[in-house]
Length: 455
Image 1 (cartoon, one colour):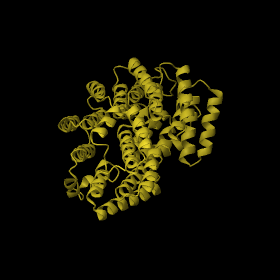
Image 2 (image 1 turned 135 degrees about the horizontal axis):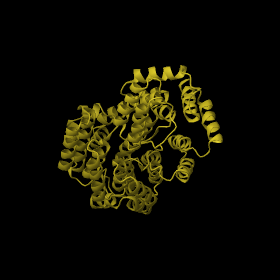
Image 3 (image 1 turned 90 degrees about the vertical axis):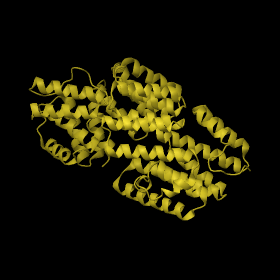
Image 4 (image 1 turned 180 degrees about the vertical axis):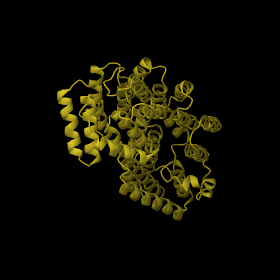
């Protein structure tokens, strides 16, 4: 399933860890029930705050109150698909909407349902024409502008997305989630001061929502401002104790400075608030392996090679850390087995159309191969693969951003080992300009992640 395409079909905005929806307080939605309309609007309000479980409940209630409320069904089906909570029900609702009479709906409702139908049938070009045709007649509709901006963002057309999100704000200055989108676009491109301005504006307008504080927390982690990150993320959790993304990001801030016991306490807090068992397990693995790596306990890491942390999560820090440990200890059979498992998983992802996850895994594979080649002394080939990983990674999300920076520090070490000190110092300066704390830790470790000798 192409998640971004399905969600974009109804104007739900999703990108790398951020879900964005915003609507005016008095939209034109077709229902005969004032009570259903109130639930529907409450659902939109919940989506605007990125409280998707609440939104599901409100949309479901709206449908109960008015079984003919077609657009509520569309929103509900899209969220079910997004959360993968009930794909059978989502499919049934989409099928119902494909056959429904939409002549009495508002122009906006009609266009969004018609576009969904085109996408459902695989008529992607027609779906684009439907959106462009609606915008030609309604150029100032923030819903359609936001949708077009989100599509551009999902496809990597950042300049177009930025222009469109800015147009949304010119049309509707209080459409706060556009500030969030613009902040992430700027962060993706390394424009961190601009990103902070957008996130600050978002927080100023919506201080009682968790997401603006969470977004700032991600920016602060990427730029090494860990205390500020923790404060911002704790504020998000205070506002919304079940806003689990903020626990995830807070753990990243804590492990970045070696506060592993605090990170375990944060996992326990999240578990008590209802975080899923899968996420609790994932975070527990993340903390355990990052602590072992920080302490360079390579043998202990290899002893966990067959644990579910590694075999169950090829995409993630446990497998990459285990690969590094095997390289450091010269266990080339284990190195090869991890690379083979990653390649098999990549092929599966590509067959299933999991584009985003496949891209992330490809970057990790390139990084791991580069590490292996560097430790074996093949610096030129290692540099090519590490650079390929760097090109595929951005600064937008917390853990991929940390991985990008660490990948760049590995390349600094490779350049030093190859005797290219000028190039190494130039790249280290670039890393320091983004995250001075990581650069300082690297320097204190003797400019080593892999343990290579200086050339």
